[in-house]
Image (cartoon, rainbow, N blue to C red; front, side):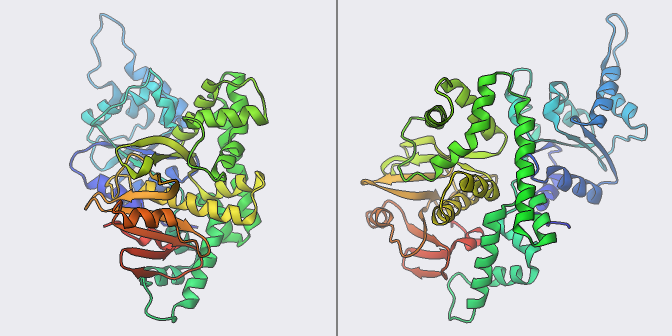
Length: 455
């Protein structure tokens, strides 16, 4: 089943951009990078060369690369060794602007990664490089080609993307639904959207998981597929850890992250995520683990696109910004799976998933072109209380307080901050509700957030 992805339009923008940069596609394992890039290439270029450095084609290409770039001192230098490398690999190769070369899992070779600048400047052909673990390129042998690369991150499917495949007719109604309904005529639509969102919260947005659910309409089948993805990521990640202590931290870290997520407190008690996780991991699994090992494990999860960081604005002072004060998973299915394993009750799971969903949505809005500012999504403290999230429009600098609520919670801290001029709007995100507006306070069904604009 083809799952329509919103990222496709950004790929078209890159192709039509006159800057002729290489395109770097990153994102977590299994988010659909390879599929969407190959589909895009097949539909928009006459010729395609696909190389996966993690598979046999990559081994074959490395032989071609070594042969083309081999040089004996004192002999004439080959003026175009990289062109020859691709001709050795694919004899029909033509260096034209209607040719695209895809190099998948580029993090497997620093030699090839370091050629990105030459690919961009010496070829008419267009280059797309992808990687699941591009965090590895922070190692010193990798050189980043700043200015020659356009970077696009692919996330797991959004709720809108899921909904369009789940029920196209309902998706159309969703797109037409007003933020503030005039009457009760749309009650059935709200109920159907709430049902669809509950399914999405349980399975998340990994394409293979969504495809499995849409084919079988079976939550258990989808969740089994999700477990496979978790095992693939864990097993592949472990090969990058050589220290037994690092491996011990990594295999136990997911549940510890969940226990942090469900705690009712103002950010982390410690100064950083790694310190907080060290405290939990050492308490629950081993007392001998170091802060350094926890830092490496957390950094790997972040660079691999499995978790994201959330900052903290102290006393609603945007100049007092403390980065990485919380972390969230980057997919709701993973969040749901580990919340269940951590023993969270149904109510806690629902509230945590709603906050995690809001976090992911805000993070996407900070990708280029930015709709909201700050280096990461952020929550805030104010006068002894806490505000779930604060967003500031990149267009107007209007500041929004965002409260993710269930039931009839009033968010007293956010209302106090709004009344005292710390923000221009208060946005309530709730589950079983309809949209409403009262002055500078707005209420939305949480699944409508993806359509909302921070003006």
